[in-house]
Image (cartoon, rainbow, N blue to C red; front, top):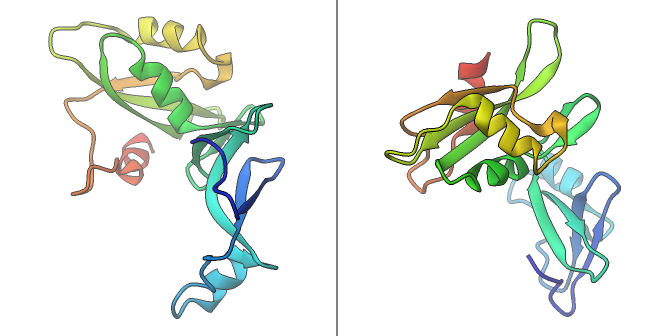
Length: 166
């Protein structure tokens, strides 16, 4: 994402939550006092986004707070896993959601759209992700689909995928 715009302050909590402060910050949400109280605290705005920062101060987006989930006590960013999957030459699109195994443990599940004529199987994609990310982030299940459910603006409707996974 880059670095903060001059005149704005940011802080990233230990959990990666981004807080912003600056001269053009809104005063709150229209007719939403409860949400305003949660998101606007002492001049800071809680964005709902997760970020990391490198040693040069460059910011990296890791996902929305409400889309992150824990696997084996560690946070998993669906976007991070999706990006790893999309790096595979056979993958056109992917979406990752949590699913609960029969044992009660939560694991990543990927929905994958393959490029026409490019075959790949679950084991190959799982190994591909494991070679790039921590083992616990690799999808335990991969479902191949013709398309991902999206809004009119093209945003993936993860809630529909979570419903399928239940």
